Length: 324
Image (cartoon, rainbow, N blue to C red; front, side):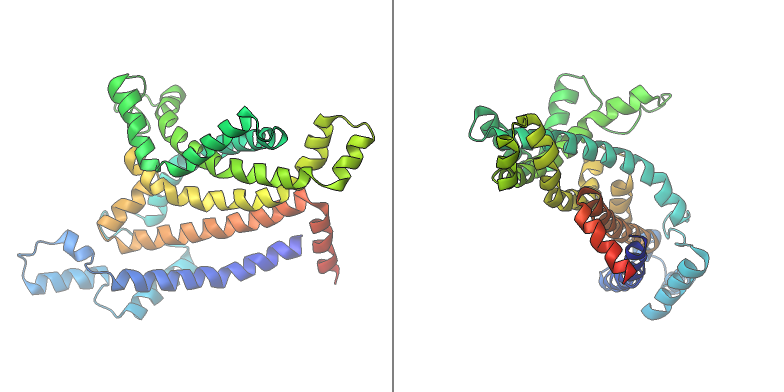
């Protein structure tokens, strides 16, 4: 397993390298530049050119990329924001915590709802519970996140005044745990509904496929209780395809945070990404793209490791490959 993880990490390095090249080229091809956000159009051309020299935007694209990559590889430096002049690394870290808190909570709750509900729906096929679960699943997938978020804000914030509509804490408040939890409720509901809606159907489908296997009929014929048949034998094998879907949820949540964090003014990576795009902050966008690519690669690696934990046969095949 260790050898496999090392090989995957070595493969990830050129992938990240390729991602940075593509992102750098796309940004430079887009119309506009940070200069448009920093200087007045009434300034003379000489002043604008001086600003380009100051920010290093007067050099060819490959020279700019070379300097950015050199600072990253040799010093671990993502540069400084062209708009706020803050360290990009510090900006990303300061916004990473709220995003991880929001995404992690939503992912845990979504999985905690999807797996039991999917299993119950499969074991009670065509029952009222099954139809209710599938209806809720389709609603969770079909209703756009931004629409659900705005609807919850209208009901619980504007009409009932039960929950705050934006931010992570009350302005000027102490920012305690209870305050953060109250601000989390609405965005977590939106993201959890999306995660649970996508995965209930996968869990149900996987369980239905496993429930018809011969070894489960044999276990029932031996007198094993249905609870043990479902949870000890069927559930373990049904989790194998589910792990793949759950591994994809991390990148999806990371991308969906851009919309949700903007709606609820949540001070995370999503809000930083949108503000960087609007201001054409090249340095910050490059750092965010690198983090996003790293998250996707890490999610795929964790998915492969979870395969070995769920299915011992995969673990043995890794050990055999390592010995060979």
